[in-house]
View 1 (cartoon, rainbow, N blue to C red):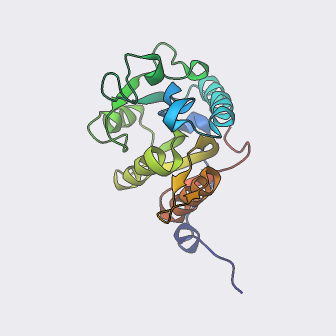
View 2 (view 1 turned 180 degrees about the horizontal axis):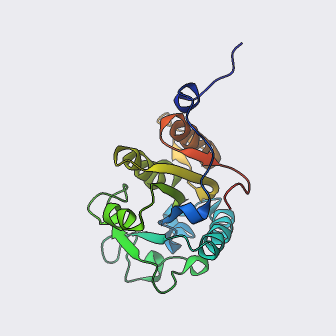
View 3 (view 1 turned 135 degrees about the vertical axis):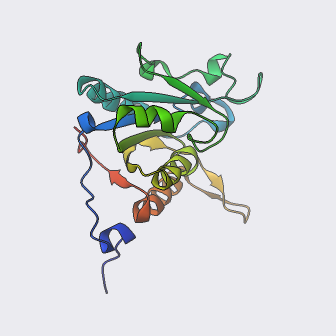
Length: 197
């Protein structure tokens, strides 16, 4: 039996994660909406703690940092004027760290994220956030088309249970791991453990 390989491995791509000093960190939708209510993620708290450590490392490395926040309608999911739509306290942006609001899963769609990243003069981006299968995945896929080399910090991401289409459900950790496996095939380097420095 042969060992499974990604398309990137088969192509001989360099899968070494970048140094944070040579990358831009993009934190996606790490908002209070995911801590309670219908979108509560079972692994939100550990992912937030991990993302906070990653953010501290990026700040220490003087890496450009961009926060993404999903913006929903007033009184609904991701209402940015309410507590539910706020970025979690542990990841509150510092002065000079832009917050880009988006309305679609792909963080580049309808935003100036591409221009802001281009202004950093970095082709390496590191993604972290919520949800792995949705906005993180959509952003990583779009980033490839735009010429960025993407790394995803696996432990700084999380997602939720999803219906399986047969009356049951697929658990959040399975969804998370499958999304990362899909992205690793062609779209991103998946960083696990403390490899990002």
